Length: 287
View 1: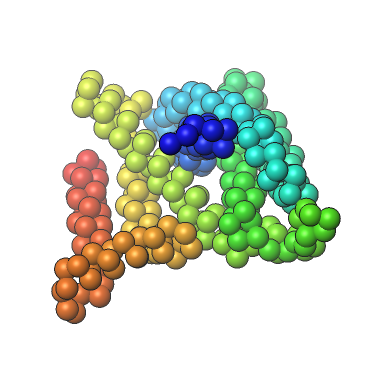
View 2 (view 1 turned 90 degrees about the vertical axis):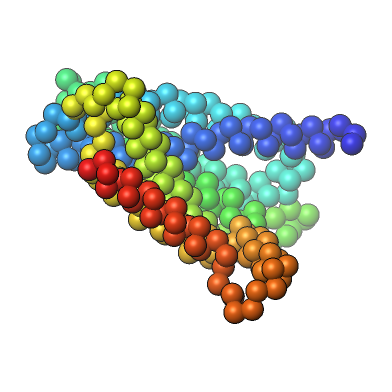
């Protein structure tokens, strides 16, 4: 294998994007989780929810910052590593990425300071509004980024003029054929990641130091979030245009090898059902 410029560019970009996706996939769900915690605190007055918010918002701030920094590097690598591709698709992908900055990032940046440092400086309802705006900003960011990524896989609404792609129909570009399922897949994955990260971290702290009321206690809403999302995962993955086809080919290949007549059902279904059963049993044992 020759380590030429093309292979090195691929390795560098793969490392950057693999490192970057860790943080958006966590902060998208964590922002909504923080909004739910603050809503519960305003509704019930239970200090446990406020303490949980103050604990997890610090983790959100660090994850958000790392996501921004690694995302900036990734954006520059579109031009430095794939300049020919950027020249060809810049008229389409450039505005989509710019929309993400103008709508989502500016919204998050405007309210993030209030969310992090505004507890004693603004009213409770205004602080909750700021938290909701940050959560909305993460979803809008996912919307535009998934739209751009989906257009790379299933381009639509464009024409080629003078050797470059130019937009013809922005509605078809934004809502290209694979976008709805990819967006739903990403948001659900982010919520699922957050649900199990929060539950796992809380479990570790409880086992390490014993349950500390109001700090590491995990409200039942978090445990109820993980199991339904786990149940939704297999059918949504089945509909996903990329990963689903690869998965079906692999498992059908195993079926042909086993030569088991009458077993046309996907072979991973029993494993999923068993896994979900154990997760639900564990959650019930904690409640």
